[in-house]
Length: 206
Image (cartoon, rainbow, N blue to C red; front, side):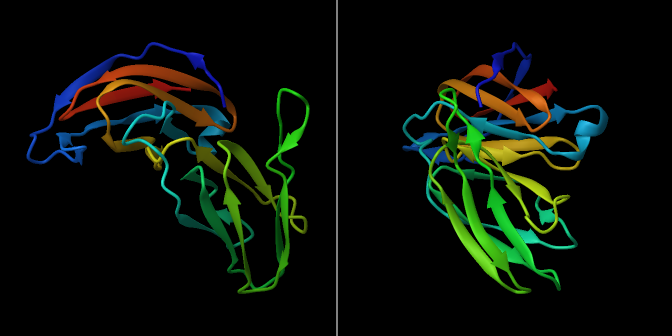
């Protein structure tokens, strides 16, 4: 998920130290903003995450859920930290499957491939994602169904909402690399210098 470096104007918004999250006994930093997407690509949300792993940013394993409902994967884009697991749950009154063809790395090898098989109504399967990257998820029985699991290298990751807004909190102050991912746009990379107790506003266009 490497991207080209861009320069984005950022505004520092002072957050009262008493209200700011704490990281290692110090007031944490944050990033809020919007990602503007034009055209048909706007049907997909974007994912914003911290790239560089520093003390306080390391990923924490957990479990997320992606539903199969109304012949769709919901949410269509799920963002998790590396090491987390996803439960794929069939909420439809018909049979579904869950698989990924994986992604091709620079050596031409397929990575991240998995196949959880078929699930009857109410059934579910679980997959752990240990390596950062964007994983396409499909259903053998319904080719129109597609979703992405975006695995970030840190726990600082967010999916934009319907208005394109996102928020990252509890970040360690200092030089920070932010990456913006979208399934139909080249990824963008932004470098910020975060200050303790301050939230930076970051607005980008894909």
